[in-house]
Every structure is written in structure tokens, then in C-alpha cells.
Image: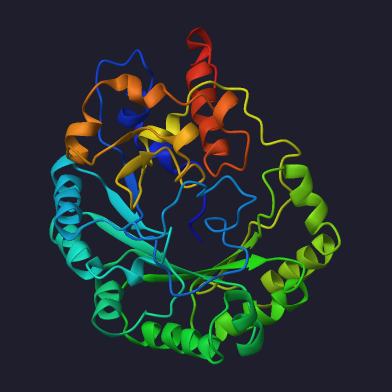
Length: 356
């Protein structure tokens, strides 16, 4: 089985890697751009990091923000012209609540740009589902509840929403096409004992892959670990059991349920992945990653309100080095392990490279 989740993907783009340092004389387009088209969501998840006051993610987010249609189509055209390899859509809000998503992905697809999306799955039906099934690389749903009652409690939605989302996924798989259907199962103390049950249910409806992840409850790694400690070993045993009994060539279980660093502190001073996978917010600001989105004080790279993304990107390179992770990123960071790999690549003693 090939690896869907690996920090080594970037090393297949050696020219891009060599262009990353400040000393480089060239700026290459990002490999992958994440776009947050709207901050509107039809679910209201109790743990959503964008709406929980105690987490730094989303602290400056305006829930009314969305990217205007003409600006979005301009961005899509820039992605094609620049040679960006992939675009994914995420929140803020739910991308499938964005009224111009279909037009956007049609433009990307016709221009040869791979696309994908995160979603809660409640609107994964009709014409947009047909187009994703036939043309998208992947789609991944976030889940937490294990039945209608629990799902309603987690997301503050009406009874029956869980059944509808499960049906949407089952019907999506029946459409055929090459779109890979994934689920991110977010584990907390309340659903921990239902982990195996959900992994089994998701296999039964044809889901291709499930990523089991811990719910982030604090900006402190230590506090996250303390929160999960009463259920940690139980979840690990249930995931192990599921991998042994359920996993096969058509169903992958990726265990991302792990303890976090006690401290989220970084010991490096620039973020390579900022140039690999930047984020365009619904506020038309550019952020270095999804963990820094809507954090204007420490996470703002720049804005495309008055210029195109293409103009912004190929402007002065200093903007890529405004953020010092050792100062500004003392929190969970999805790019941290990838950054460390790239920085280790650059730190290798060139006199000894051939002694592999």
C-alpha cells in the first residue's frame, strides 16, 4: 500500500526545495495552496478550533467573510497560470456552503490543477458531488459522533444528520470515479470507546481511508496530553484491533492519535513550508498554514485584497521570512515535522553528502 500521509512528499519536488532559502535568487510557485472560501458553516461543532475562544487558531476570524465570486475565479486562474499542482478547500466554514465552489473547481480542473476538499459531508450530494466523484483527487469528512444522538450533541444539529451524512458517503461511493473518500475521526473522552465501532461502520459504507486524530483542546501540548490520558491506551488498543481486523487493500486506517510534544516550541527561525503550502483565507489574507489562519498579529504573511495572488507571490521574497516559528508559533503546528525534515536537508554537511 502506498503512503497517503507522509512528510516525504515534498522531496519529490527538488527544484522547489532548492528555491526555499532567503538566499535563493528564484521564487517558484507553491506546490499546494489551501483556500478557505467561506467562514460560514451549517454545523456548530463544540470543539471547533475556529470558534473556541481558548485556542489561538481563528482568533481574528470574521464568520461573515467569504471570497467574492470574481476574486475566487481570479485566484483559480492564477493557480492555473502559475503551475500550482494542487488546491484544497477547508474551513473557517464548510467549503460546500460556498455558493461558487462548483464553478471554482470546474476552472481548476479544466486548467489541469488537482483539487480536493474537507467538508462535514452534509451537502455532499447533487451536481457538486457528481463533479467531485468524477474529477477530485480526494475528499475528507470530519466526524465525531457514532450515532444520530451523539452526532447531534457534538455538532448542535438536528436529529438525523448523522444518518444523512453516512448516506451521502455511501451514495458518493456508488457514483464511481476516482475520488478517494476519507474520514478524519476526531477523538475525545466522550467518543473514545466508540472508535472501533465507527471504524467498522465507515468501512461498511465504502470509505477508503480513516485518519484517527486527537481533539485539540489547548494551546499547550502538556494540557492536551493530560486531557487524553484517561482514554489514551484504550483508544490505541481499539485502533490496533481495527487495523488487525478491518484494514485491507481497499480500506486504510491511519493512526494519528498520539501524544503531542509537551511544549509546542520550535527551535528554528524560518518556515520552509510557508512557500510549499500557503493558505488563502476568506478574508483574502495569506497565512503560512492552517494552524496560523486568522491570526493577524502573528500569522499574517500579506493580503491579496488589492492585488492578485500571482502578483503577491512573485513580489519581494522577504515576506516569506516575516514569521519566526521560535517566536510566533508556540502552538500545535501541522507543518512542524515537515519543516524539520527540510531544514535537516539543508543542514547536511555538503563535504560528506556522498557518504550515504
